[in-house]
Length: 301
Image (cartoon, rainbow, N blue to C red; front, side):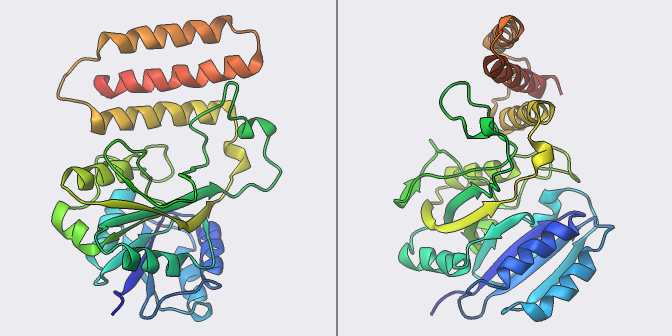
């Protein structure tokens, strides 16, 4: 007998994007006895009304919980604690899910009963209005892009500690994993719409270290909304800084001071950015410089 599936969506003051995601889910195909749970995290906009308006259009029950304490990790933990399903899949509030996504999640666990977690592909939902440089993955590519992407090809495989670790936007797990290893770190993750993160990667890493098994299932497909206003150098530099900072915070050892090589890396990247005359090269090193200082700041804060 197939296990019950809950799709968990955590959201903060993004009613319009949430309405878009729920509209796509209204067209999706679900396994029997599935549901959707939306956790409104310190929302002051029309999120509750958006959820109520979507209920009659969805083929499965839709529940709403409210978590007043700001922070995505708080919302995730509140949602997980309220779920009695055997399977939980995470959907971001700005995603366009593939029509067969819910079925793909259920099929992944049925096909791999030894899997404790499964992940799938996240692709940017490009519209053609984005600047050309975002597609440059050869000479001086800019990363991390402000549009998440996780694509390990069209062959399923096991993902170990060596990674690459998925984010939480297209991750599913057996509820017992949460019960056994605990929830998402409330020291990590975004609060409101800031650029913090890594609560999902830390959770996956903790699960793998506890002996849980993670399977990549490419048929699980979601598309991430592309916010053109985020495709600016300043935004990407801020993203690189915060992403590197949070990654080091959950991966670093107990040492109190930065290793010397980080100072050298920051100095070298800064110098390359200063002397580069070719704009794509300068942009590349400016972003790498921001990331290097983000790594250093993880030890200073």
